[in-house]
Every structure is written in C-alpha cells, then in structure tokens.
Image (cartoon, rainbow, N blue to C red; front, side, top):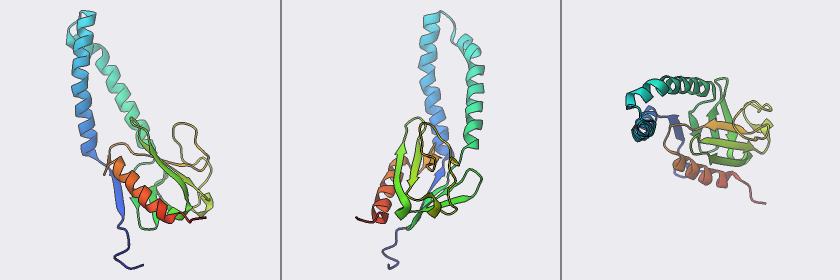
Length: 171
C-alpha cells in the first residue's frame, strides 16, 4: 500500500465548547419552563429557582462525577485499527478485521458499542465485563461514551463505515 492510499488517522476528543453550548441551550430552554411553571403555581419565578435550583445543581454535580469515572475519549481511528482509552487509563487496540459490529447510538447519552469477533485478538486481550454501559450488552462489548465529542457523531459513523467495510473479509 502506498502512502497516498493510506487513510489518515482521525482523533475524536471531548470538546469543552460543545459542553458549554449544551449548557447554554439548556439554560435558554429552562427559562420558558420556569415562566410557565411559575404562572401555573401562582409563584414568582425566583421562588421556583430557590426551591428547585439546589436540587438541580446537586443532580448535575453527581451526574458529572459518575461520568468522569467512565472510560473517556480520546478515540482514534487509524488506517488499520480502532484505538480507545480503557477504564484503567491504558489504550485498547482492535483491528478493523476483528470488529464484528460497531454502532453509534443514543441521543441524550450517545455511545459507541464495538463487538469484537475474537476478544483475545484485541491488544491487550479483552476481559469479560471489563467495559460497562447501559442496556443489555455482551460480555466483551466495548462501550465508549461520546458526550460532547468533536468532530461529531456523523463523522464517526462515516469513518467507521468506511474503515470497517474495508477490514471485513468477504466470504
């Protein structure tokens, strides 16, 4: 394979800008909700903020702490393999030929689920139930949260489709 035929690596990272944009949009959407609720309950808007605000702040802080414990990006797609940060801080490498299925799903909590053909061919070999996530997963599924990722999920889907279709041997 010549240098011109090689596909450049694509790195997906956590984006503080996307997080900030999400928080601003959430706040802007909360303003009319607070206005309607205060009108329905015959209270001033600041009374509702004082009543529910601390609870919302605590829930936000707790959910952020829980998500920090999960495996995070970066996720890297090279010309031969998918590389992802592991829960213990290392790097997991799965060749495209060893990927049975890779799926980007979820809207509010987007995630990538990768199902290897042979978990022992991953570098390092996968252990059963080492990765965790929501829903019913197979013991060797690799689940990566994609919250506030840059570039976006559509780029990830397109790159995975292009690279995995090349790596899968035809029967």
